[in-house]
Image 1 (cartoon, rainbow, N blue to C red):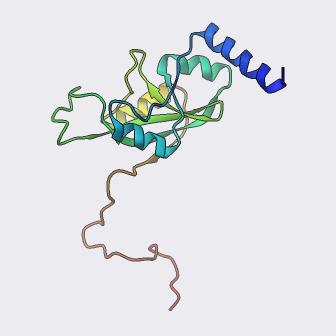
Image 2 (image 1 turned 135 degrees about the horizontal axis):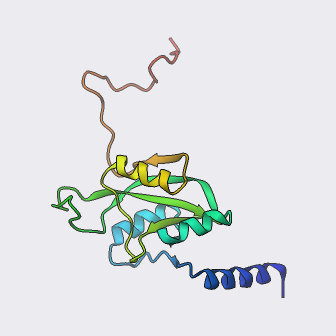
Image 3 (image 1 turned 90 degrees about the vertical axis):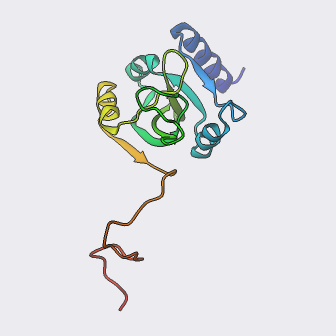
Length: 158
C-alpha cells in the first residue's frame, strides 16, 4: 500500500470517527443553476456548519472564507417573493485545500440575505477576514459617473 493510499484511508477513518459529513457536489442536482454556478467556482464538496469548529480546531480549515452571491435554495425565510429576490449570499471555505460550500445541520445550503448578519456569523465562527464576490449581478455606474477604461487618479497615456 502506498503512502498516499494509507493517508486517504486514515482520513476516511478520521472522518467516520468524527461524524463529519462531506458530500460530493452533484451538478445534476435539483437546482441546476446553483450547482452549475458552484461548479464553475471550483466548489468540490460541502460541509455542515456543525463540523466547522472541529475542523478549525484540528487545523483543517483555511484562514479565510469566501462570501459569494448565489441562487436561492430556500423559499421564504422572511425574504419572500423568490421570483423578485432570486439571489442570496453563501459561504465557501477551504477544507484540506478543497473548496467546500457551507450547509446547515439539516442538510440545506446556508443562505443569508443580509451581509451584516453574515459578517456576525463569520466572526462567531472564528474568521477574521473573508473575500466577497458577486459574479451574478451586474455592476452599475454611480450617478454622474462616466464609463472609463482608467481608474480615478491613474495616469493616462496622453
